[in-house]
Image (cartoon, rainbow, N blue to C red; front, side, top):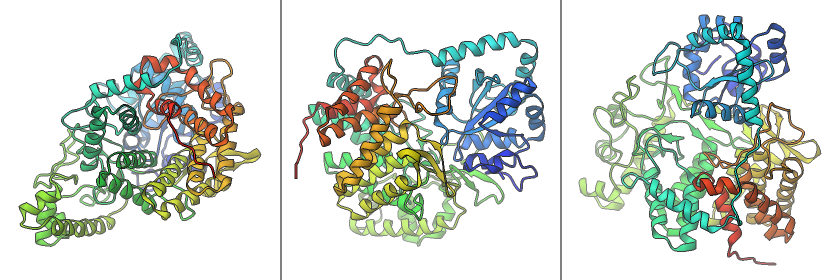
Length: 628
């Protein structure tokens, strides 16, 4: 059964999978295959093109395309007759996602999910895009008309398609040819990145650029490091303004803590409501660093509330961390329907009914509640009469407005938040993607370990240790390696570079917190596996997949620090730290090789590699060592 449909009248091959995303599509009338030889052998045998659909279980537009197209019997009939259809969970197979996303980005100029790519039976892409509406609209071709056009072209212009696919495969497998700059990249590149970020800064609202706005946690962390190194007050001001604006907006869950994925507007008011584990980890780290830099208690509060949200809603009984919460959930005002943000938004009368009179007035003022709703209206009327809670006024302003002391206003508002949270908890909760990913757990483990040291919270240390124990036992692969995914009692999918790099970071952070040497040993084991199994001995750096992984039409290698930092960037930092802890120079050489391999990219666009620049900053020192 899908995330939105009623009882399924069909069952396809995806019903045997573990991925929550694939299981959402197990009841579609589309004859879906999971990625594997069976699908491509069928495509070759029947001389059909492959339709590859990539997404994840908490993706709003993935749900939309499913409801519009994949649950539509007429569309399914076309797919089943003229194509072999494959579903891939991008979070379960980041290697496949990375490879074909590079193709879509190169051919269309943008990317996203759901990703829709058409392949030859030899896995070579010849057409791609993201979401397609069922009929022509939004300036995009309708999915059914696109299927008809591509099916016709496959039958009548096959040689042209094969040439295009061969060219695409050659492009994806090509080595980078950027000329490396003279000299070794150093702190001067950090200064250039800081200058560029400063120019992109939204002076009025915080953040970078225009809507939609993403948090960009590692860019903010880099600016903090630049401020610390140089005393550049502008960098600190950019960070302070952005962190305050994000925490005051609807991007931040004002009741339950934690951050939504991004803001659809420039003022951080209306978010895209899904919550991803990696955002909680990275933003908690950034807010902790900001608190260390400035002593602003609001930063420590946001970090605590974010970590407490993860412990409350995204942690398994065994201590591992779940992947994500959906943007969509059942609409409390329209039974039987699902809607983005339904769990989080409020109509004014509902909020008033949940609170006492005076308390309701204070909450309405504090959280910017309006009679007709405060959410930006979209063309489909999705947020009519709805309010997203944001901090429209300070506690002090609320106190003055209602004749209270700030302390009294704080107590009134805290009680209101508890009541609203309890009321919200009675709604049907968003879908929880309960698969456990080694790489994202590594980030979260590092955040909890760091928070336990910075905030003096033993329970955060305990959470980090418990999750690290889970990954090291439940996701252990033969020969001392790691699996990528665990769900429903099964570990599967060989670990990729991010799994080893992020868990090496997490293990090392736990070691630095507990001084239990087994975590240092495990960090070194993960780092050594990276050096042995992922290295590009020619161009340098590390591939996303190991030497023993499934062979795709190209072996992806990532360096861009997007919503999640690249495995190469995190590995560079881990290698540097291990060199200091172990006094083994081989780790420093490995870190240097990463920086040298991507020096041209760093020189060309330093703002795209802020986590790698943070590793360069760490290597530049000064650092202190304490020997027992």
